[in-house]
Amino acid sequence: MSDEKSLAKAGLISPCKKVSVTLQLDAEVLKWFMRHENGKNQINSALRKYMEIKNNQRLKLDDINNVKKQLMKNFYTE
Image (tube, rainbow, N blue to C red; front, top):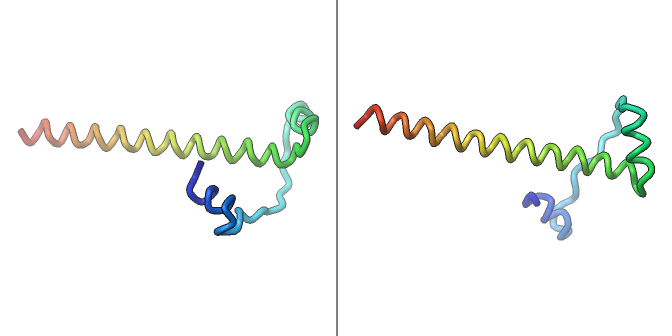
């Protein structure tokens, strides 16, 4: 869980601002979410989780690339 999310849950900062948008979804996808309680909130939660996963993957990829660069630098300077 992100630090910002933890602080928001603790009431130390306000949660992320919600913005109204027009979004086209597959009917089947929308029906699936709406069958569950708070379907719209679940869509937001699913998108947020996807965003966090992609951010974490990007961070890991950046770390791997930095290690590669460092190894190459060390290899060519020795």
